[in-house]
Length: 263
Image 1 (tube, rainbow, N blue to C red):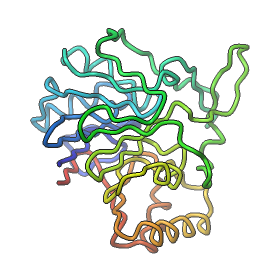
Image 2: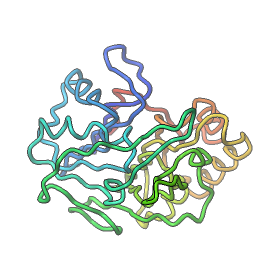
Image 3: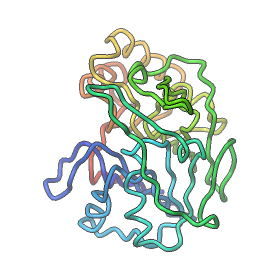
Image 4: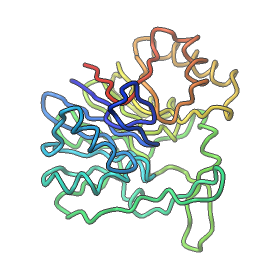
């Protein structure tokens, strides 16, 4: 198994573009899966720069409905005629907004997708051999405080707090992809019934919203409850948050940037 970060907020390679978005290519013995598509076509340009062919990707996994994770899907579909799209129907039907700063839409503009290429997920299931999706994640552990600024618009035009029923997580051969982990990293791990050796994705732990004590407590719980699991993060994990977690779990949490490749 190999995973490569194609698009992210951060890069150590000046030849790769950054954006507020996330896209990772996961290659297993059986499948080639694109995990989210970032906000634009940045992931396509970075893939070309890295010599990565996306035309033979067989699955695209969309973790949730926000445009920084699904906005690039339309560009992939222009170049890939076979990939099936794994997504929650609530992600495609929802109208999503952020109140960080001024109120603004973060709703994805979905391209036309034929029914035979669309895999709508409303419950946990196995998509293919070794490829599993977790849905409707129970929220029994603390939720990220960054969610307080995120809303959906209901049928009456009112803004209500997003409950993130549209968020999915993907599991394959010990790797758990969290997307943004809006449901909370611990909740996603608790909902995963299979052994996890690697967690990859954003953790939605934003600088200035979680106290150092809260971050330290989280890192201690992860160390205690998942001593054999390694955590790779960037995108919506703050720099200060990462440094606080690193002091508690120095050998088990790692940063990634555009171009990072791990086997």
